[in-house]
Length: 148
Image 1 (spheres, rainbow, N blue to C red):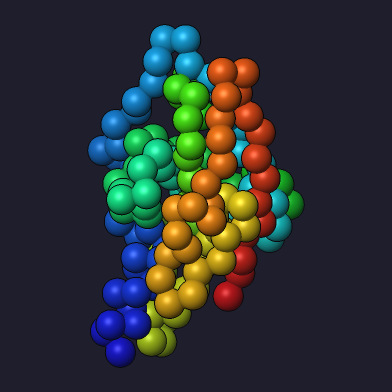
Image 2 (cartoon, helix red, strand yellow; image 1 turned 90 degrees about the horizontal axis):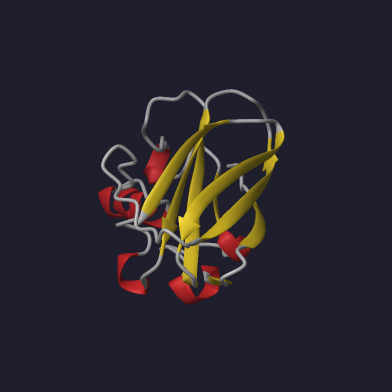
């Protein structure tokens, strides 16, 4: 049973430590707007992490944001990022306890989502399934949260 809990922790990027994230940006970087849909309530916050390396996904983010939840659609912005290929992992921390809550067998109790609506299956989706490109002019992406 502990293995299942560990898998869900990895799947959902519970290792995100938004307090110590390092922002990697160029002075002439692009802006990324992330529209997270399906947010069921304005309770708590959304914790959103940006990744630029398949080997680090979803453990070591390059930037992270914590934003107040807004019902239906919550918008998150990453400003000044360099052009490249990125992926996003997010979860709705409804009780704002800075933890991804799980229940029996480690199954999630809070909503989560990945860019491109990539879905996990016993582990995080591969970076390539969640990956999207940000050009010099920036980008806008959208994905939906999955509630347990």
